[in-house]
Length: 55
Image (cartoon, rainbow, N blue to C red; front, side, top):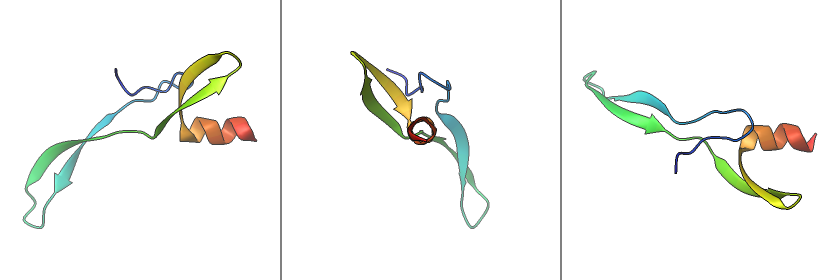
């Protein structure tokens, strides 16, 4: 399953690893997804949304 936050819709990003000789290789940056139970439903939520939900 894709790593997408069910609240804000953020997902994985593509980026580059850059070596000292400026050679670029593609990589992916995944967000920090946590599974939390809210009420009777389990949702996948990123930690930044979880932090603002606790405030």
